[in-house]
Amino acid sequence: MSKYSQALKDWFEARVSIEDDCHIWTGGKYGQGYGKVVFYPESVRGAAHRIAFELYNAEIPDGLITLHICDNKLCVNPDHLVLGTRNANMFDMRKKHRAAFGSKHPAAKLTSAQAEEIRHTARSFEDATHGQIANRFGVSRSTVTKILSGKAYKTGN
Image (spheres, rainbow, N blue to C red):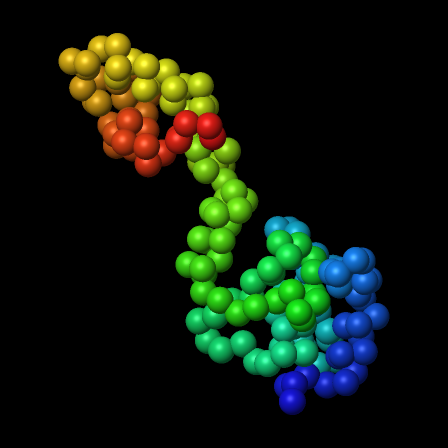
């Protein structure tokens, strides 16, 4: 039994458009692109996919988040929603290449071409230290070390 009322369920369903297999939230949205529920009669606020999970499946236990198996942020189809951990979500994002990494990351200090130039410099000048290369490119020594070890700016990013 849902902790939510039939009035909320009716209001919620009026804001859903079925497109193919996904049930698309047509109401308000958060800046990140997820659906936003604000139902004043009962002071219900939250992400549409989380509300959908609780309306049609079960209450979400503490420490778990609601994941979209369809990768559609606006989908509220209860069959497309599963519970998981933040770590599982991050792993899934990396596996599907949806996570920003390398030069695509918002905090990136270098382009992929600059990272490749760092690799080339390290190969060409074997006696150059990571600190010297870092100074040349205006980044930290640890950034150079991560690039050369393959932990950052992997080839092909």
